[in-house]
Amino acid sequence: MPRTRVDTRAEIRAVAAELFARQGFEKTSLREVAERLGITKAALYYHFPSKADLMRGIVQPFVDEIEGLLADREAAAEVDPRQFLADYFDVVLRYRQVFELVLRDVSALAQLDLMQQMLAWRNRVYALLVGPDASPAQIARVTVAIGGLQDCATTEGPPEEFRDAALEAAIAALAK
Amino acid sequence: MPRTRVDTRAEIRAVAAELFARQGFEKTSLREVAERLGITKAALYYHFPSKADLMRGIVQPFVDEIEGLLADREAAAEVDPRQFLADYFDVVLRYRQVFELVLRDVSALAQLDLMQQMLAWRNRVYALLVGPDASPAQIARVTVAIGGLQDCATTEGPPEEFRDAALEAAIAALAK
DNA sequence: GTCTATAGGGTGATAGAC
DNA sequence: GTCTATCACCCTATAGAC
Image (tube, rainbow over all chains, first blue to last red; front, side, top):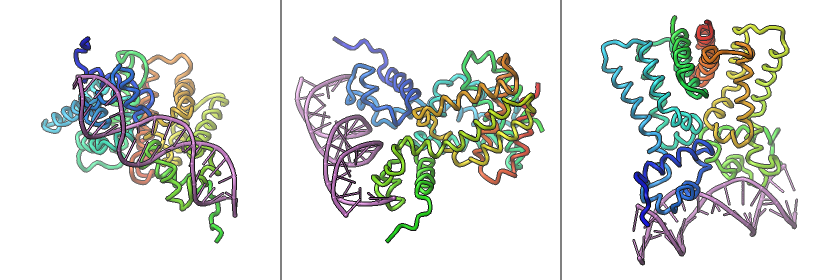
């Protein structure tokens, strides 16, 4: 009786992502993930070399998109703040589920060397929006704008309901 | 040789808070905390009935202050948004270390029934700042303001350097 | 690709002596 | 208040058969 699984790796990621989000990364055991899928722990290890790699597999696509956006703007001659915030917000909204997982398990991600990379995003965003020699006050405004948008992304309800208002608020926070 | 400890419970909390913040709640074992203090796990259990209670002991003072602030404003005839944001920000800044711990281990806190309480804060803040029948757009603006301030609180450096600028940005985000 | 079996270790928590 | 000793359990990960 062959398993009628199209993409086992993807199914593992989906189930794991849901459990990680609900119970936390550390509190979720691979036994639990395997049971939910109807396979054994050992089968899991065929698809992912470790629990950490499973987590990375879930978060990596989101990380790659943000890195892509940052690289794109860093290569551009000049950056439109409004456009950047909108694009950044849209990526976060598209990966909403993953993003919430990330927010709820920061300390777990820190052990996967993903946090360092994400913390570096902040400085790259500062450089993009207020230049390399930004004052603490300028940095504060960018932080309010970006942090505020991120917090909005975890709000319930369809994104269309709040997307534009959140962007307006972030832009207002940014303005000197 | 009597231990020259003034307040053992407080010292345990301090050491645990530091380890929890650095490694995460789940990744930090009570053996580690005890070793750092030069006592045994069993001694720890004399002061705190469980690991969860130890965590609660660390976070509770912060929770109580925010609850106090909210209760105060809910009892007031009217609320000055600027003043509320300033007071809220100042509490968060005062408990900066605890607040960072909270942010880094949301999933751990969820299991202590502390998250439900904190999530309720959001709705109480919405009610205070934009009334009980707020539109999604109004809620988005409040979320940007509050979330932005919170993100600022985790910025390095002395608070005086960014406090006022952050508040201005949050107020700007709030304004219609 | 998936299984059984197991290695090898850590964990939170408790009992009872001092 | 602190200790030693221990319980009962769960974990990630691997070896090797099918």
